[in-house]
Amino acid sequence: MARVYNWQIGREMSYWYPEKRPKRQFAAVFDTNKCIACQTCTLACKTTWTSGKGQEYMLWNNVETKPYGFYPIAWDVNLLEKLGVQSWTGGRYTGRTIFEAAEAGERVLGWRPDEMDYSNPNVGEDDCLNGVGKGAHFTGEHQSWFFYLARMCNHCTYPACLSSCPRGAVYKRPEDGIVLIDQQRCRGYQECVKACPYKKTFYNPMTRTSEKCIACFPKIESGLQPQCFVNCIGKIRLAGWISKPEAARAESPIDFLVHVKKVALPLFPQFGLEPNVYYIPPVHVPREYLRQMFGPGVDAALEVYKSAPRDKDLAGLLTLFGSTERMIAKWKRAGEQVLGYDETGSEIVRIPLREPVHIRRAFDAARGVMRANVS
Image (tube, rainbow, N blue to C red; front, side):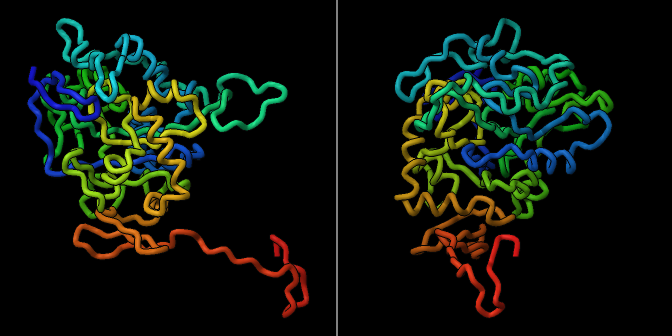
């Protein structure tokens, strides 16, 4: 195995191929605090890409309720248990990744779901951990809680699906880092289904090949964000490009959130894949749960997020989420306005830092009527 550097775990690790990063890497940030689990993103993806025969159970994008929601059942806790102790020393992961913990004869530590594991996409929806007792009141961090976790393929830097495929059918595009499956080469061995720790590759029994999220690459190539991003009514998502930490550019929206502010974190970085979808953690969930999910940077990330009302740059960038269908390559704040630019430097969106508030008099003198919400 080759030795590669994974900055998310702060060390080198073993991987089946040498480090070869794309020219640029597709990435995204999801703000979990804004998700209402309306599943509009799920339907946008479903109606665009997976409405065919054999794809009925496929949810390339889904939203599940944590801690009891899963799709497929127990996708995360099964692997966390198999992986064993996952310890960190500061920002360095001292446990084993799923590549380093692979059993003899296997390339990746994984498991393959049964068909029935896909039968309940809404299992655990809105189920709360702990009851709400008499006298309970708001204290910031809740003891009774749940939150919504939107998920799609992470288009990882070190994909487990790619490393496990005996046919070499899974590949990472050099121009944008999007991970795809060559349908002509795939023979449906399902090793990728077994290897992906996020369970975001699916087997199609009609075509007898595996399929997965393609990040809506035809839209990406046209400078547009994917379907699940532009249809998100909660405006929790922002797509863009991420650099390595040492090459981070503050003018890049994703770099600013991930590397400069460190407010957005990868999902289960200890797996070792360097996933490229990042999450702003929920503010009300016990920290211990969040640390096992997003790593040791959770406490600092939440302090930064809660400072947004006093940080105009951070608040300004957060307002750009969902503001345009175009990919925002660069951004800046100019006074009380926030601007987004495309790859050529052309302005594509300009929005106020704060929405104006207009208070109308209760009595409309011109029409001689009282104003109400329904008038």
